[in-house]
Image (cartoon, rainbow, N blue to C red):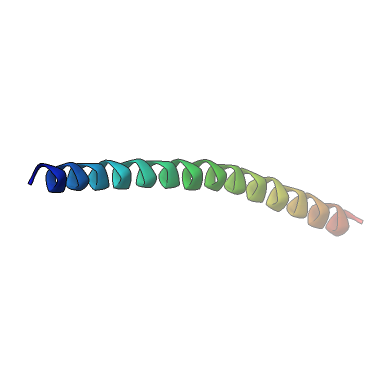
Length: 54
């Protein structure tokens, strides 16, 4: 009975640990990707405005 409780607790802790790692790895690159996308969109709009002025 004690072994079963130990493995259950270990499984829960491992699950929490792995989900925390995945959340961190997904969250930070998403912010960086959004920032890069905003920069690219800004550059495209500037190019279009220059073409319209010519």
